[in-house]
Length: 379
View 1 (cartoon, rainbow, N blue to C red):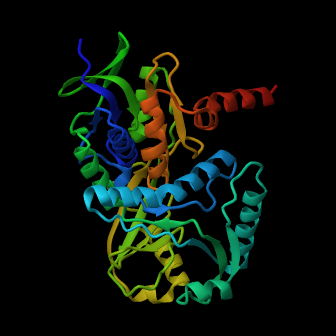
View 2 (cartoon, rainbow, N blue to C red):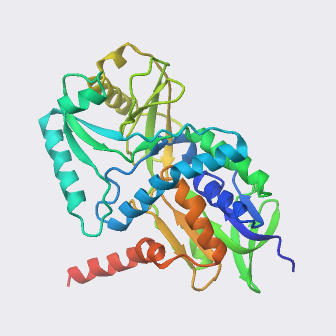
């Protein structure tokens, strides 16, 4: 039995692509097994923020991990541009979460305080600004804006170009991208993995499951678990307009092409073929209350997508005890964490073990412990 690859990465979305690129960069022989372009990938429906603000309430380690990603994103953008010639249009000059009315301002202020008071959280300089302070940085805001929170580490990128840059880059590293090859079965024999696809079997020394919500089915095949709770999100895109938004918002950003993306819905319906116009109306209404001149623009596109979401919203990174060399990675923030996946997670997979800080905080064993703790509460 011959081994085809050092590592098989299952999933060619933004998460799998970043890890595969990082492994290729380290000289590993890698295959990316992907369902192909008809997949309902989260990468196509993301909002493209590199976002630190308010990440990690309830899990301080996630705040630190996100700050680390934000700090290394510039290096990733530079390496991708040097290798592929593609500019991913990274802009990191801080981002806002705007509030409408006094109640929202007060709630946001309480959240910022709770984030700052969290034991062990990284300092990421999120602060509340009054409406007049916001207006100095975003002069076009409307009268209902009561202020908001600002974090200097936040930014955004062109996410489809990032996706393309990873794919272009990993081809140059000799990574094999194998579309229309979803994995149905994984076996571990003689110290290597055998992955069954419609086009035959692939053999690899290690396997990384980065298949989004499908990880829930694949992980148990290698002695791991990935409890997922996907949600649906909708996005609106306006026609191009003059530059007016020099900083991205949690729910709105002006792209490098001049269009405005609006969106932040979270729905439990998991059908991405139709849109809920009521939700679009609410998103559009909030957007134009924040920036009244948006009322004059046409919406040219809207779409919905299924988000990859672990059950508690925090990432899962794990390695298998029963199947050494098997890893799982699930997260909602594929854009924000791309630099960590490309540099840190790839390095750990290549070395054969996740570092204790990662597996300690983000292991799926926390779900078992939480269930046990909940069970004990009832007695």
